[in-house]
Image 1 (cartoon, rainbow, N blue to C red):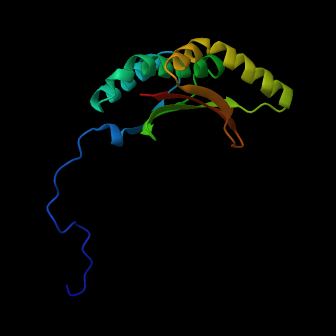
Image 2 (cartoon, rainbow, N blue to C red):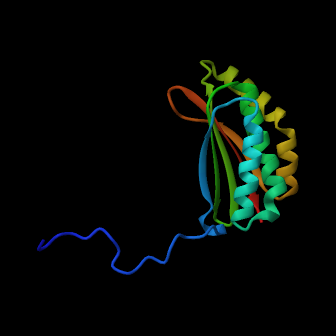
Length: 153
């Protein structure tokens, strides 16, 4: 066919890109049961080991577990999404849950304070590692909460 577009690369592919720190970027849906904290720990440990970040494993595994556990305490048995990404020389672990939006601003603030206080172990571990953590409402009509931990190498 004259003038046909070619979708394949012209040079032979070098093969799949192996796991490296620079290409660590994963998202996974968790069904929301209490057992999901264990799945999150296993997944984060495996990902960091494969991508050359095993020095962050202990704190990152704890952070993922605490984020999932807090989401389960405040929104039991609801699906959540865990993201693990290396970006700007830091590991970012982000969890999105389906915590319903509060109609009253005061109720939303009280709920946020209660959740923040429940995450004291996460706060201590991340702080000891020179990182940061937090939570914020997801700006969607149905609500939701985004919680995260940021760890530096």
